[in-house]
Length: 85
Image 1: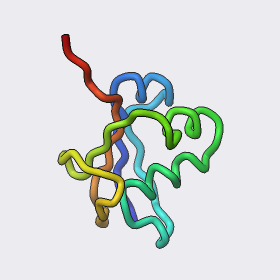
Image 2: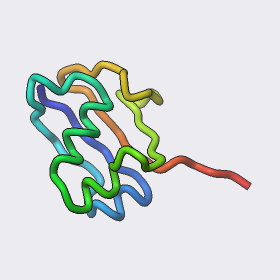
Image 3: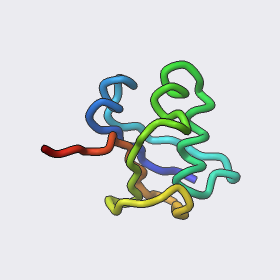
């Protein structure tokens, strides 16, 4: 499956990229599985996308949880939670 990845704010800064096209294996079917797949790259990817890290996710520009299914040609985005004052 081909999808687009987008990274925002401190996630983008840490990873050194704002977007990437990726081909996923057939076993990756949800937003949470995309996150886990990217963590397998190791290094900074494992650190920034770590399971215990507060991270917001979206699929096709809609806020989502890890169990949301993904689809061919979709867009998965990762960004830090926003706090206000």
